[in-house]
Image (cartoon, rainbow, N blue to C red; front, side):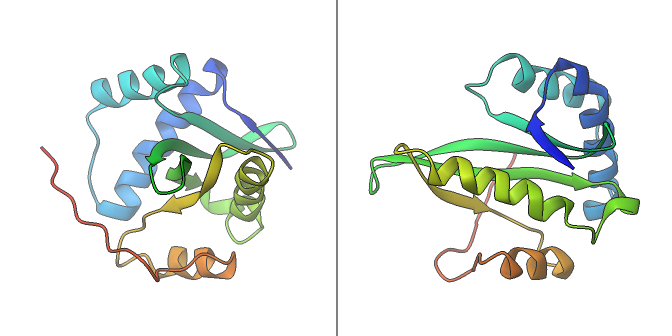
Length: 148
C-alpha cells in the first residue's frame, strides 16, 4: 500500500468517492457540478487543502482531504481530516490506519503543524471506533455548525 498526495490524475476517483460517501453516510445525492468544481479547486490550489490517496497494487482505493485551522493558542496549524472514503472491499484492511499514520508523521515532522482533528457523523459508530483505536478522543469539543 502506498499513501501519497493526490494529483489531478486522481480527480475522477475522488469525485466518485465523495458521491459514494454522501450516499452512504448521509443518504444524499451530491450535485455533480459543485462537487466537481470543489474537488478540482483543491487539486489546483493547495492553500484550500490537500487530498491524499491510498493505492493498493497501483489502484486508488481511498482518499481523504486535509484542511487547515490556524490556532492562536498554539501559534501553528491544526490539520483537519475531512472527506474520508475507503472503497468497501478495502475496509478493515488497515487502509485508513496507513493514511492516518501518514498524516500524523507529517505533523510530527513539522514545527508548524500542531495536531489533527476530524469530525464524524454521530451515527457512524464504526468510524468512531476506528478513530479511538488510533488514539484520538472526543474529550474537548463538540462541533456545532450552520450551513447555507
